[in-house]
Length: 348
Image (tube, rainbow, N blue to C red):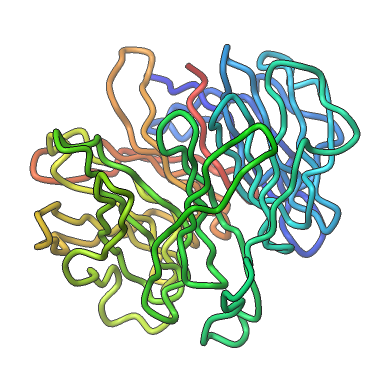
């Protein structure tokens, strides 16, 4: 049994010891990782994305941020462009555009997907509009806006999780670029990092899950059909008893019939399994993630089509693998060593 993957990593001194972007085959039970291709000259590719048509993109998380497109087989760099800000940490797709969240500068940029890139993005928007507060209460992390991720909301809208401002902003895309039209205010000190949407309800309402990096909690919000955002239910603590806990990525759980969610938590180095409910969410269990600092996790399939959860333990220099069971169970099946992994992306 093997699992085909792309891995992102930190490469630069002071950040990590990774090799860049790699295409690999992993046999977790045997502890074997086979490298099939490695990028050259790609620095700090901490986030990867398969775009339309199977195109492969990566950020270069640097002070002068870059975005690169790579050949999916050889990992040769096909194009490179400014991210429009500093420390880009997330890529998304909305409205036929590649969206780049720049954590350091607190900006979001848009790149075309249907034409060659120019020297700069098509547009870059800041995360502080007139009259809005630009900082949260956690002084060393919320001194200003920090755009941490984006998420498409239909065909012409997208959301931005701003860790620095305790806010999720909603933009609508127009001919002249994006326009801020609303959003969700979160409790002070939440530090929203990543987002997950559920399928819209019959009445047009949608449920949004917000991972709080700074309060180590999972928040449930609802967007009504008229565009109004509200928080629903109490936040779920993801690492009870741990003072230093920083949640990272969120995903569903196929073994539970998608009735559970899984969140990686750095610091406690755990996976938190949360039962979904109509405002009555609860922590089902926590389990060791198999390494230190689980920065990212993703569901993949092996060559027989069986699902596996792969967890990139950045500071433990390890990729750990789990299989799903009923009721949100996760069973470890092994793992492999790999330097400073930051992102796991299925090849298929």
